[in-house]
Length: 193
Image 1: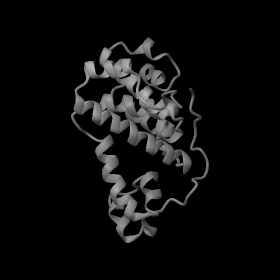
Image 2: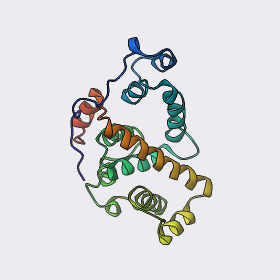
Image 3: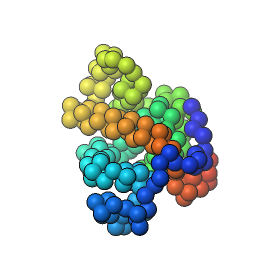
Image 4: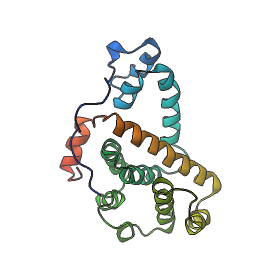
């Protein structure tokens, strides 16, 4: 699947700038432009106040490697066809050390098994596909594969990461959040837009 390039058009809601930010949202602007997720959530500071710490914990550093987290985020975002998340996390995935070929496979532009060979990563990607794309129970063979290679606490965290990414995918897509211009420029240079 190819995600359309570019910024995508006008956001569905007004993105709040630092000068218009409600009092409860202002700390999120302390270091400059916080990006469109914060700028949209600033419409409801009470949600912003709980959502951003949750998102930061789910997507941030932990015992799961940065690489594994980006495998989950890019693959989930591609399955849900979220332009904002695919483009933003394609750049992050490059920074996390993923190759162009790996990113293309995660985005559905090449077969997964033509690029990925590590059994742990293949089990993880099968899990992501089942959680993000499936309905009802996860197939037994998929559950067996991930449990054979990942510890329970890792499966819990990775599953929560899929869920958090799905929530962000729907949020960013519904609100048509814009991708940062520097990200679009970088992906254009890398021929990944």
